[in-house]
Image 1 (cartoon, rainbow, N blue to C red):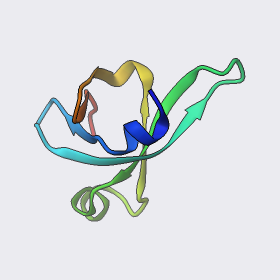
Image 2 (cartoon, one colour):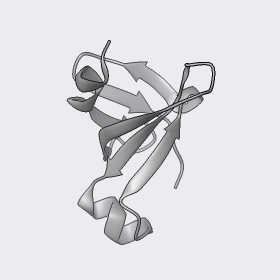
Image 3 (cartoon, one colour):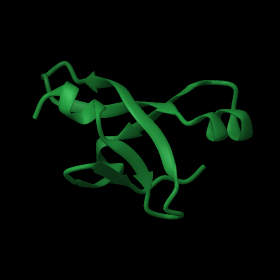
Image 4 (tube, rainbow, N blue to C red):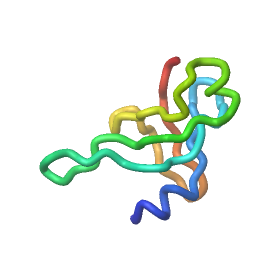
Length: 76
């Protein structure tokens, strides 16, 4: 799977079913493994929770990568 494939998927929080945002980048470890996804927050989350437009989702927070969505388990 390529980064461009991931960028077309919506990132959904399974705790509340809401869209968190879309992937804009990934974080890679020194060993070359994917460490986390960098997500551009939806406008709702940016205004409500912080001024930063980015959110990091660690690999262990990803529950499932589907055909159209990525399901994650995060707490704000």
